Length: 561
Image 1 (tube, rainbow, N blue to C red):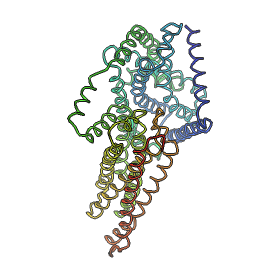
Image 2: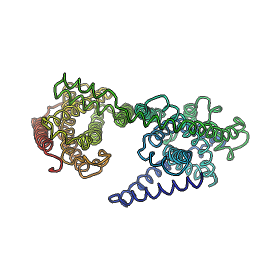
Image 3: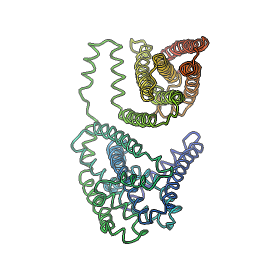
């Protein structure tokens, strides 16, 4: 079996190398990815190095207390990451073991099924857990530097983490194998994807609620005791994440402290051996039957076609196109996962807005300006993710619009209404909701923000949709990623940035004179209203011009664009 695993690994290594060689600008993207990973690691290292340096300098706390604090911190991190690793392993197992197109080829090779299962299981474990090591490696290096731990601590931490994370990922594979026996594989994939988005959103909100900014600034000892109570996790002494956090630090602290959990090392070793064996037995027992059932389910044709025909017969064309947009959006699990992440980011954003200190009521308008800019950038990013690839996401099926008795421009109008209305609702909620948090309740100011939210959403949505028509890529997979990093995405982000700046610049004079009149007397000059009128005129002209170009482009076959 070892020889078979080596042969499969060599095959996939050659395939990955060939795929990398065919990338356009492969060295540029490789260096860019390495730079992003390095910058992320440096930021984490600097953050935790400051935390550990402060803890090590406190005369009130002994080294066993500091190690106990680190153990609870590590336990909290492992508890937060466990759900992510488990759900990620379930999702990756669905993709690699049951939905992958090359499984037919692999199972037809002269190798044992157990070798294919083992090789793909190793891939699932790697894809599900490598981010955990990338996040924890800067933390371990900061501990070595600031707490005077030996360099071998990094290797020991890697070993204990592998004994904990590996069984979690293998347990996800076993659970997936059993679930495929019961549930349809497509529905299961969508459910797990959405569940993973919920877990990521919950993790983001959980970390923000811990208020990690308190760990950077100097704290009083009483506040540190409060943080220590926040890091308490339920049943840590009797659960695997608690064993891993204790065993990781056990050789580097005094025995008096570590005897509080004397069974951590043996329990973690048993977890790292027994759970993988049981997971492998379950996966090996049900894998082939689950794969046959998954292939059979994927080949079936359900009753959605009959229902779609019935809806088409009793609905207008525009209603049908709108329903098609909603069906396509709601049936893609990646869309919902991204929306859940956006929701978590927005919740954290509102939480941060509420915590911003305002020493003088007039300073709330400065926070408002930052909020408008942030709202514009959020709308630009959402439009780049969802609106820009709207036409490219149809794939080759978009050619049907040019052979059916249907004006392709109607598709453009339906998508324009679908996405601009969605962006407008989100923009109004962001701006008006933040005004309520900042207690800015002047009627004229609320009306100005309602107009700015409408102008930002309509112009950014129209720009993204028209750019998506102009730079559409029907023949490529992952059009959303390729468009976002291509010429169309870069051009759209530049135009969107300029529009956000122009919107804020047009409103700032009116806001300045309004604040001055409210606090020191005076009135708003007429030229400030004229600047807002000029902005409204530019918004109308931009929307009309972009929609005309988008309509013309949508009526033109892609090869002629």
